[in-house]
Length: 171
Image (tube, rainbow, N blue to C red; front, side, top):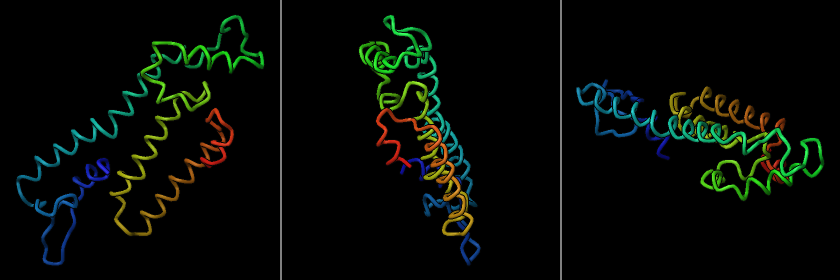
């Protein structure tokens, strides 16, 4: 993935002859002056892609949180009314301000409006960050297992999906 390759551009691999090359591109020696340019490029890309995009999503969702997850009556239906969720879903599906962001919150219950951002960070951890843990080592496998178990625990406790069967499948 793009995320994995970007993280890998920061990792050098040592060889028996003493040479060291970027894991993402064995044509670039870690001992060359050009490496600094690649490291700078990778850091900028890390800020823009695997960190920046989820943060833009989060800030966009936070901007409209009051409409995605209202805590006030909606069309005369009070929050403690059993029909409240249906009314919130109906109103937010018709709101033109929310239309560009439905792909980020549409599958989740209103109180879990942020869950897609959590999923993005989970994916970044499992596809990118894990590269730094030493490929094929026990610590890399353990780290991946711990990240996965943490994600399962969060998903199980929040039950974020609108459709209950999705909650069960996600766990």
